[in-house]
Length: 151
Image (tube, rainbow, N blue to C red; front, side):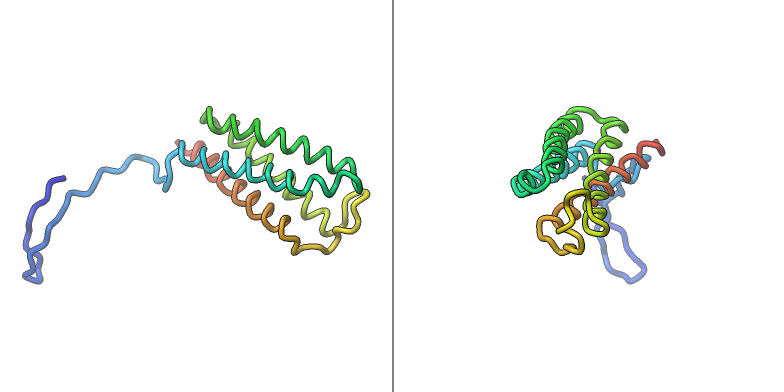
């Protein structure tokens, strides 16, 4: 890094470094970091549903199997995000986030078939964690998809 001295109007000597040249995109994080964050978020969604799956096995078996499909899908999507940089990978991650997000909102508002006890249970700790991870992944996916369209 080169530094030079120059005299400011105030009469104080200052060290000035040349400004780095910026690339065309203005992303706060690079693609590989975003993909790693996305993969961690996808696995977080799977983990939340692993923790909740046991409680659904006896009461609502179809929700248990939907959780199992989501868990298996989250591992696959995480691997795709880690190995390929493509808009399709981000779209798949967004889909994996929006599915359980909508199901949570539906289950708490009008109830899912066979799962009426959850209506109105908005402050469930595990559900709030799931909402946070799912909405964060959805936001990251939308930003990355938008950046892909600009370049």
